[in-house]
Image 1: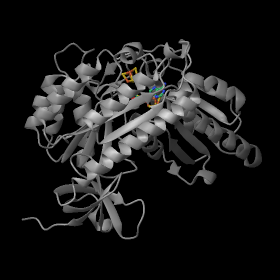
Image 2: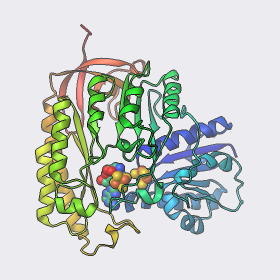
Image 3: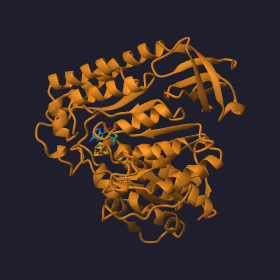
Image 4: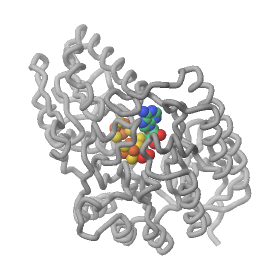
Amino acid sequence: MRKFFIRVFGCQMNSYDGDRLRTAMNHMGWTESAEDEADVVMLVTCSIREKAEQKAASEIGRYDLQRRRTGKPSVVLVGCMAQRIGREMAKKFPCVKLVSGPRHLGLVPQAAAELTPDCAPRFFMDDDPRALIDLEVVPTARTNPFKAYVTITYGCDRFCSYCIVPYVRGRLQSRAHEDILNEMKALIDGGVREITLLGQNVDAYGKDLKNGYGFASLLADAAALPGLERLRFATSHPKDFDADILDVMKESPSICRAINLPVQSGSDRILREMNRGYTSGQYLELVDRIKSALPDVSLTTDLIVGFPGETEEEFRDSYRLLEKVKFDIVHTAAYSPREGTRAAMMDCQVDNRVKAARLNEINALQASIARASNEQYVGQEFDILADGWAPRGEGKIQGRTMTDKVVIIPGGEEDFGKTIPVTITRASHWSLEGERRRKP
Ligand code: SAH
Ligand code: SF4
Ligand code: F3S
């Protein structure tokens, strides 16, 4: 068996894990192939909402049928869903031959390479939420040659009442900053222009190390690496976002003016029930502080509608908060009960139809806010880092501004990885169109 196919669900941390797995498999002499030719299919899975798990489960079902007909593929199940229900999946679907929790990724490539078509399934579960056998590989085989992710913290200790992450990714653990910076240097040497530092709560970086080296120090050192054009990070937590992060951002022009600051709800009662650790007033104060320190900042957020017990009026609080802040992007979701979390056990779950209606309403509001804010960009000038073809349209490429706005311009492959000065000519809900401008 020498061909593998890999599929990633969920967040950017999974993309990073997928890229490292791909790289490690290549190092062992395996080739990435089309799905139907693969001997081994690796699924990097997500548990954040029921839908994410259903999608992966139906894929596994499909591979199981295929395996009965053709003898392949064997499925390697990793990521959060593997940790949560991987044993069940292996019992139900004989094609599942290897299951690993997110904190045992280091054992996966070798074990995947050793699979035989009729071997018994193997399990590397994160039974101890502090265990960590990481995959020490620089992700050089990436989907994008110019952009890379680097995880800086594993796990999460916040236990928001709706969230499965602390149960499947284990306890917060910060990577040593030397390791992070060395990995970044290797990526930059390999041609990477933009790096995004990842964590469920990047602001908590270093809080477990107790050596005084926190996220602000890491940002400053990372931004100073020669050859790195753009530095991004995600996700920030309103409770942990400290003032010294803004100080570093102000002084470092390579740190992108884009902050994802999930608010989750505009209602103080719901925020309390969610165990978020802040009120809507404190959140708005933080937004003001960020905007006055970085006037050109782009703010994005995550928001859940239909948390257990959310009344119409409490939903309106979220609606009004979006009207007030006018985020560039809002990642909205209908609350999905996750077994074992506190919120899933609350009575007064909101009816699915009510959740769907609230989701529609909030998405419509955000679409109009995004359109109005995008229209303000028409006529303005930006530098974009071109990163690939535009989703539609021959001869068009796309790139992102420092504030993470997508801009589409005419161009070709020769532009990929280059910084291109553009003037915005048109705006739509989700993207901007532009034309090239000569550098003065
Ligand atoms: N660590 C980040 C985000 C983690 S998960 C934070 O603290 O915000 C990404 C997003 O998924 C969350 O921001 C939340 O909006 C959403 N999410 C998490 N659990 C969910 C659930 N049970 N139902 C619906 N959305 C959920
Ligand atoms: Fe989940 Fe909260 Fe941790 Fe984010 S901070 S990963 S929402 S528990
Ligand atoms: Fe999903 Fe796990 Fe990320 S639940 S969002 S893949 S941390």
